[in-house]
Image: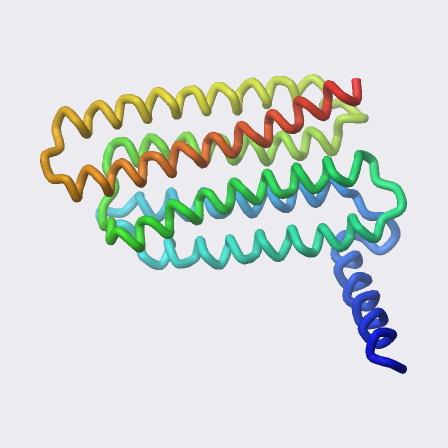
Length: 227
């Protein structure tokens, strides 16, 4: 067996192993969305836990990097499955766009963790607490949205639009917290380093909500196209 043939055989074997994780007989592509959203929610909950103590829990911050790697691996495996498929319930490009959109949520949470580490942030405050609460709720709603999307052909059709509205409302709530936090910084803070640290963290926390809204918008666009 030449190298190319051996490589092809190995790739097929690897693909079969990946596919077996999602069901031996038939892949439910919507489960790929659900798993990705579950990973994002796990990262969000880790970040919330990190902020709940008097000082930021460094171990929880480290765990987020491992979760982010898990999210990357999931997207790569899903892409191999999708590329090998002849027929998918929605366009392959739409599936990948949604998967990558969900992964962007996880990446944005990891970005917060990275900046906490780089800038040696040791404590949260009123605004980080409010942001992470909204973020976790938004990730929970995103997860629920993926479950509702899977069950769209049965009884959850109306719930999809409700969840999209809720995720958009959470992003708007995050915008209000962001404006309030920026106003507080420039009204109270005098230490330039503290100002920079807080601005960077607040901006990145707000971005996690934007990423959730982006996914909700993708689903809304998909539903309009399929209606």
